Amino acid sequence: GVIHMNVGRARRVTRAATSVVALCAFTAAIALAAPAAADTPYDPYVPIPLLGWCPGGSHIADTLAFCEGISYPDGTRWNMYRVGYVAWQPMRCIIAGSGVMPTLAPPGGCGGGWQG
Image 1 (cartoon, rainbow, N blue to C red):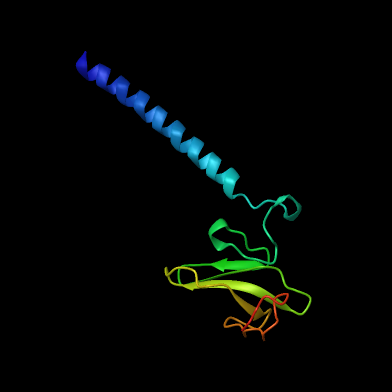
Image 2 (image 1 turned 90 degrees about the horizontal axis):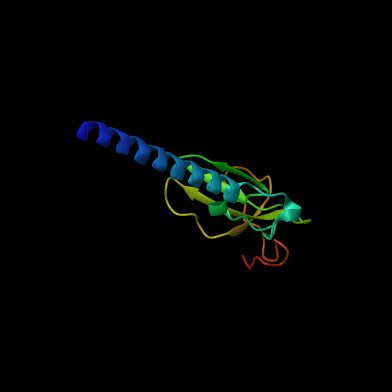
């Protein structure tokens, strides 16, 4: 009797926990899904790596990660990066396509927002 009740209770708790985990996973997937550019409140020029918002491209791996906004007409773009598991570094303006260690843009790049 007691063992049978405990097994039944364990199954109910397991089912409830599985449902909660599934609901959380579904909610997170919806919240983190990359929305279409027209449907987002985010600026396509400004990367937000913690939200997965990298409209200019990204690469996220254990040892190196970067996240970028789209390029301005002058070929510059906002970039954020991290090395290893260290926090994301402050946003900087780079010359798009200048390699793995990109060249910093001159003052006035990124729509005039970069002071160098």
